[in-house]
Amino acid sequence: MQPLANVNALPLDGVRVLELGNFIAAPFAARIFADFGAEVIKIEKPGSGDEVRDWRTPRGKTSMIFRTLGRNKKSVELDLRDERGREAILELAKSTDVVIENFRPGTLERWGIGPDQLTAVNPDIVLVRISGYGQTGPYRDRAGFGSAAESFAGLRYITGEPDRPAGRAAAPIGDSVAGLYGVIGALMLMMKRQRLKSAGLEASGDKADNVADVALYESVFSILESLVPDYDAYGVIRQRQGAVLPGVVPAGAYPTADDLEVVIGGNSNSVFQRLMVAIGRADLANDESLTSTSARSAREQELNAAIREWTSAHDLDAALEILSEAGVPAAPVFDAKSLAEDEHYIARDMVQPMEVVVEDQPELVRFPGIVPKIASHDGKIRWVGPDLGADTDQVLRDVAGYSDEQIDALSQEVVNQS
Image 1 (cartoon, rainbow, N blue to C red):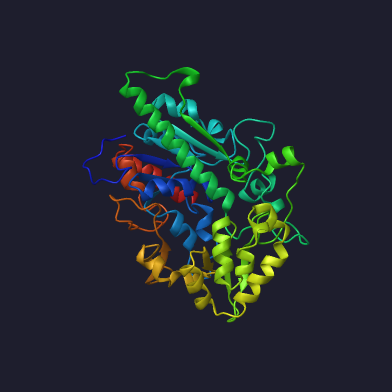
Image 2: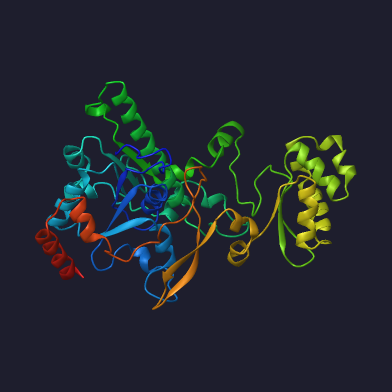
């Protein structure tokens, strides 16, 4: 890790990350590093690259999901099944701070670029390993995509309508949450290394702490609140309840007069009272029998009916204005077009127009902004996900120290694999 060049540098300037991942989880984690200044080198399979390159592509050859996950990264084509490709990885690892991978457990070891080999060339390297079921345990060898992890973790069981099969969010929640835990794990281990060195200490052996083992199912399970504690303490097995959370009343999506929907959260004591006053039901606001969560839960149908009657008599904008003035959390149910054009998204740079080639000519495409906001970061995306292999020569020359002859030899191997 290089020292920061100046006080205004991005937090991760001087950090180098090697991404060996495909699909969502590892690329999502690496994207966060890239967003905040790290040099992220994405290793891709020659010829085809990351499989998400051709996901959901009505036009063109490179998907917008890849352009999003691959932003601010460099693309290098290397065949990890070939000895020369693996040798290149170890050369790159010598000056790398973090390696992020999401292969099935044991894959890196079989290729000869596992933790032992990486640590041998760089004792300070941190390895983030994201897999379906983790690096240990009886299920470690099972294939594990986010869909299976969400099911195994219990999320799918409680998602959806009670009279229908298990549902899912229309986004890769399991992969994304695992990616976030991967970033947290890497930063914690890097911070520990720095603090040990500052104290003149050096970890060794089993205490070296250089691997963050992130399981997709554990990442999802960890955000499911008191799912198991509720079962143990109360004998409650949570069931699917549609668009509401059990015991969180009143809360949900309510229809408006213009055939739209408003989501309202009125489940805390003070907010509940303000909500009832706002909808003209001061009688319910002043009802002393409704001053607890459990009491409101027992009268869920009555309360939701009162709210629904009020929202159905107001257009969405009018309802939102009244609720906002009353200090009640509420929001429209936005589709992609609505959020991309919303003044608040635009004011906070959360939809950023970037020039990208979809088919033959550059077009302006709006991409999601960078989170979180910090003073030293202008919040701008530097570039979207690169074309396959766009940075191969530069990275091998400047980072791995390869000669032109070595680069040419590897380039010929890439051509042969394509």
